Image 1 (tube, rainbow, N blue to C red):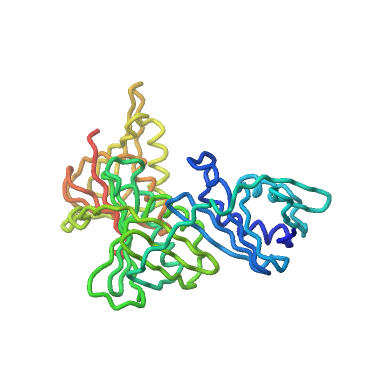
Image 2: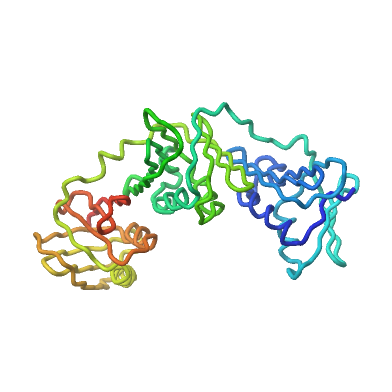
Length: 371
């Protein structure tokens, strides 16, 4: 029975939307499949890894009877990608326990697994509902995502804190060595008496950054203690939340760093990359010597090789001698887009604060290292 008739592009688009969370090796084989529900002209595609569930739909259905199948995600996407792109017409149909993909003179038979065994995530009762522009949410995630921990024993650091207050949305990420925080003044359409805090898993953040459009189209966000559901366009994105208490990040952000200078972001990136070539490969540490008018960046390694870079800066304070992990610096500088960045220090040992000139919406805190 035929249940899909469309162009290659019209079928490939929803498959790529939901296929992003499907991994090659799964504890349950059926999680490598996409659940397809066809009912008239509407076809719904669903995937899950038991932590995240993505659902989208397309008007590409054919036939009067409902059809529900599961198909191997990676193979179906690979086949469609390999087909000629210029207006190729494709169709899908069931033949016994198989699913057949047809395109021009090509015919591919795919195995399927029982659709009624596909594990659809249940949705818990919603406690809070917000609405915010897609580009604002995407921007907030992009500004901090690189600071999330990876496989840290403190599991709550392997994600991003999303805080929603009255008129304010904030994202925070830290791995214990650096912290990124970004704010946006936005009306979320809810009268809140206290802030709502949720920790989004690392995979959720990366998938949302790929799927959210760069427009001000509304995103409906529904949150409870265990889940967050994001609805935008024809996409429904459901994610479990990290169960834990995020550390008090406000205590980490320096308030009295009075030794300040501005530096050209691109010039600094170039100097850091060159100095990093001769840095110790294990620790990737660079030494900063800051004096009135000058920033010197130095590196050395076990083979007695050295690098020296010098940048002119508008600094008139006391001399400083600090060490930094160059990876942490390049992560944040490569993520920003503005021409200049602002560094603020208190001492050789205290936390460094990086911000954008004339803006406190983004703050990056970096702990120094011994060189």
